[in-house]
Length: 477
Image 1 (cartoon, rainbow, N blue to C red):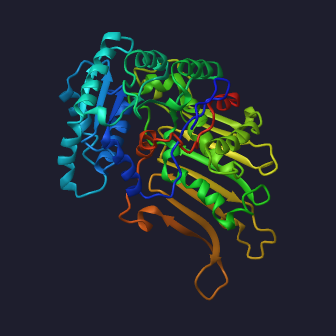
Image 2 (cartoon, helix red, strand yellow):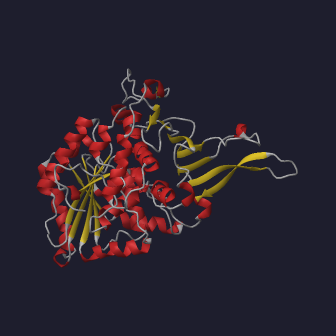
Image 3 (cartoon, rainbow, N blue to C red):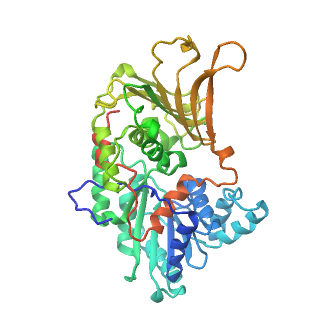
């Protein structure tokens, strides 16, 4: 992907849609063995790194996408601990590795943990970032870098407040020192600012330090298997094309439910709330893929443009179509202010003012500490005119895509109930991934995203995300 001019909107990057097999991709990654890859996890002692980043790296290692002969992992955080103490903290999140016989997990975990080295320091400490660069350079020199190239991937598992400071330190002290095919890339995650002003300021600060081709803004929801499948479902299946519009669809529900509360993240969550934490990134991304027109091609800019058109067509939200709530016990968290009115639950109705979707409500729901855990897209079709079977009371036709847990797609259809009587029943055509694809390991979202940040040398990643500026210009919550 070419470097974008400063006047152009910054483009978030997402996973590549490709038809190649995992073995093909593994072969391309193995080319790194001619040089070396250094993955630096900043915020290594934090919750995100322990639960998501390191387990994703471990699963890539077990599948052969990270080769111990050419890869080293560095952790950096303020917590003053040793290499072994960091490894001990991480170990518990790796023991349930995916794929392979269970008895091999312990051995794989031990080998993987030996790839990790830790440097502690504050995020504005020049001497500590010099030390981090020194440790990375030792690894590169030990791999005889002159015969290949060095790649440095910095994953910021940090609050966005410290992005500018950390990126300044990386720019000044930790950039790739070798020019034959090497690179330095920065991975940042949502939330990217709290509103339009802070998002634009943050984008400008990072843009002053790095070319756009070096910046990877990720939303892990776009790495989920069923979200990846949305474009294929919509635009590669003939029977969906004539149905996917206001003439046939009554409403579309996009739901995110968690059966647990903030669990120690109350201080962080209270700054953002359920709308900034879930709605304006995860759910809007899914909304765009559900509602967008067919792009001209799978080129990043073409997909981005169609998604932005959807957002620009969203009408202002009516107050009577918003429900906010907070679960009982939320303010018992000592990190949450006693007077907090931050919502932990929200239902919002969005209306898209264009030819395809006029009059169709998009109902977005998200909440914590609810009675179940799931994320799904529910497309509910209109009633059949002339209901000669009197089956309306049984429910409508629906197409449901369950993103998590237990990935599945199913269609609710009215069929004749077996027997002599002409009676109807609502049944399902069910594609449950756990049953249909037995023995197939479905990669975690973070695995897919991290792999694509370093495995594509051309930097031509399919942009399944929208430009940051456009997201916040329609930030109407």
